[in-house]
Length: 103
Image 1 (spheres, rainbow, N blue to C red):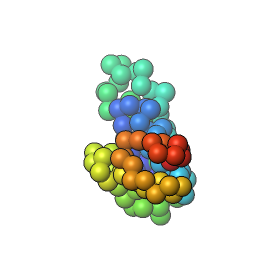
Image 2 (image 1 turned 60 degrees about the vertical axis):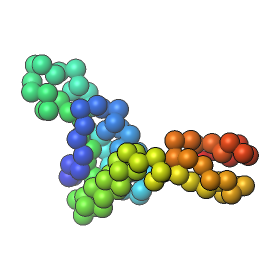
Image 3 (image 1 turned 90 degrees about the vertical axis):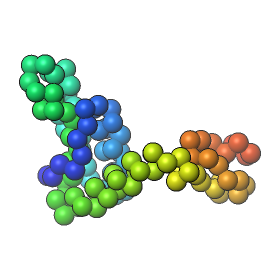
Image 4 (image 1 turned 135 degrees about the vertical axis):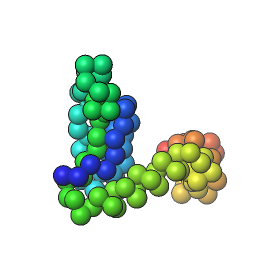
């Protein structure tokens, strides 16, 4: 297993795990339970980490994570077109305002 992402927030690590799994990459969030040990051991040692099962997918996983995080910073990059009615929807919305389609 190879670490591809670390996060102080275990929820974010779990979310990144899901992003990778949705991309077809086997990944697991590890050490999420150490969050409460901060102060007893160095804080960055408590951070959750996301590992890929197959080390050969590490670079692909990092690319998926980078793409996702950059899209999060740029709402325009997340804009989508409703497949049902064709309406252009801003990235922060997950439902079409015109026809109600869930993205």
